[in-house]
Amino acid sequence: MTGTTRATDWEELVSSALLGTDRRTPPSGVLSPGKEATVALLDAAAMHTVRRRAGLTPAAARPLPEPAPQDTRPPLPGPARRRLAQLLAGRAAPSGSGGRRGTAPDLTELLPQWLAAANEKGYRAPASALPALLEAARARTDLRPAALRFAGPRGLWLAGLNSDWKFALRGAWGSATAGGPGGGAALPAPEDVMGVRKLWDEGLFAERVAVLTSVRAHDPAAALALLSATWSTERAEDRLMFLDSLRTGLSDSDEPFLESALSDRSRNVRATAAELLSSLPHSALAERMAERVVSCVARDRSGGATVITVEAPHECDAAMQRDGVVPVPPSGRGERSWWLGQLVESAPLAIWPQRLGGRAPEEIVALPVADGWREELHAAWCRAAVRQRDPEWSRALLGAPSAPPASGPGTSSLAERAKLLAALSQRERADWVAAFISAHGLSEAFQLLGVCTVPWAGPLGRAVVDALDIARDAGSYPWSFSGVMGLAERCLDPGEATRLELLTATPDEAEGASPGAGGYWSEAFQRLVSTLRLRAVMHAELGSEGVVE
Image (cartoon, rainbow, N blue to C red; front, top):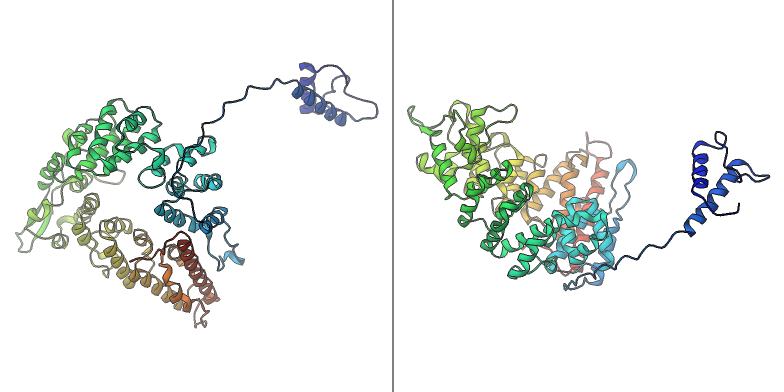
């Protein structure tokens, strides 16, 4: 073919290719002697493509991006840098036959712990690891706060050049940069009034969340003033996120602002403001809730023994709704019980000892409740104890760990119990869960273990291992305990590895045991021991022993 390429020639070639040469004759000049139509068509298309590209005018070069910001944190030690590369590659051992996990540690499950330790030490992420780190954070939302904090300002700079990493410039950005040695270099210092105000006025939403969170942790009053200055012009969804940042350092000085937010045009903003105000036991809202609820709950001694009586509200008026009471209950809930629960959970817990004869919380939750209101009342008290982070009430509602969950004083819900545990000290939390496991085994302990500090305290770790040993001796397969075993790999004190060596041997198969169960348990304990030892090495590489005091 000779001559210049015409647009019509190219369009005819495309049409022939789409329809097929047997249905559409190729344009004249394409067919050559001795060539089939399809081959000739492909040759012509290739030649036209080269001609079209050769005729393109080069586009103007884009300006170079701004240089990456400096990250002044210290670099990782060499062994830790190599370990990070290994963990990011996710080279977990392949599963054995039948889905067996084998005995090698699962490296992908160790990455969150490694990132937490590296952030605690304040190390800088290697530049070469940033793409893999951002990819890992893109794939796993649970990694994002720690990964982005470790990536620091250079990671955010890189994320801005790749649309696949836009998540880093949204809400996760604030988690990555607020408080701690990671993203601090990307934010103005909290005391830099001009820099903070400039970023607050001109920054992206995630940057504004980050700077507000940073200032709030440093100077709660300054953060409140910053938010108040632009509150009326913010979008509803942004107001909700900004309001949530006030949980840090919440105090009575926040009450006037939160009280005004009760009249916000957004229902979600009003609800959050009411929740925060009810966490302040001396707030006007808490007092209004107390006045409402004391007319609903009383003690009755007419029969000799003290009984709690309940008279649920008969209406949800406008004043209650302004204070955060949602008038319409969820499907399946009665209106009056729904309103009562919201009043009780929003009232200060301090009113109940005075209202119920000077009794302590432990005595109050033991009192009988008339007319079947016990479950509703106790559930609301649980929510109030969680909201107000009251350890005495949380302890009373949890009850003795040896008591059967269904007959506990507060709630049989493991999710609610986990929230109550969070109000206790770390040591008391671990001791309570350890006693619970010793009394009831592991079948109901998974959620409770999730609120315990890592690495687990000695008594808790021993209780978990003893319960696993008992399950092994019972002859069942370990798969029913895979969730707890996975937690143990991540949360047991690495110093327990030597003590666990005895459990890696394959036990004799007991009568009635599931076939091959002993071998599966042996593999599971071998993997646990090897994971604990690898964690110990990881912490040593980062300069930390990682052992609970």
